[in-house]
Image 1: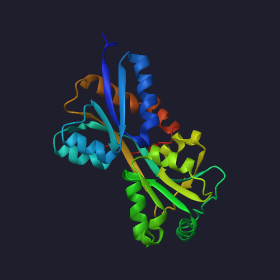
Image 2 (image 1 turned 120 degrees about the vertical axis):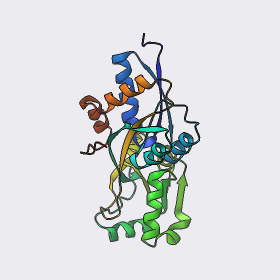
Image 3 (image 1 turned 135 degrees about the horizontal axis):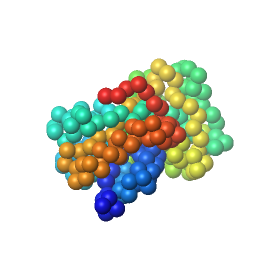
Image 4 (image 1 turned 60 degrees about the vertical axis):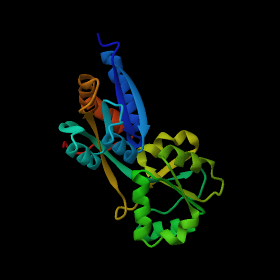
Length: 240
């Protein structure tokens, strides 16, 4: 009987909407319950490597699975790419709109901002590296607010009253928090933008390996891919 079974999911926040909705639909069809915990990608990686994941299935940027596979925590055949997420720019409704038409325009908008908000997870780490590369890090240091995750970054942006704050995060995370009074402006300029491929993987130590495999299969089925597409996860030709 499947009603008493629960598949435990540990997921990065960027694909939160798609993972949650897929698990709900999967549960309706199969009777298998789910329990989801969200954390930043670096934290998930460290927990798996330390043997403290307490999960059957994880979702992470695809490159982070390499170490987990090498260490025997995940088998290559148990990893499936869900799609990709772009790094985006967001503002509080009514605030000054940054110019993303070119790198130079982007730099000018960042320098003119009163507050710059992002997270310390994977997407925020990329933003910080971009600022270093563009020679902006020292010039904007006093205006930067770096928070632990996308949710707290979006909440801080929504609470900002400067009228000239710019937020950064994965496009999916940004759109997930539109209800806070923020809005997605667009992706960063192509030359400095970033697209992350996300994947789901079954852990070798899964307590419910069959349920985890079934859920991954659902996520990459046509119906599951549409769920992720609806939440802002772009579908690509990658299958590895």
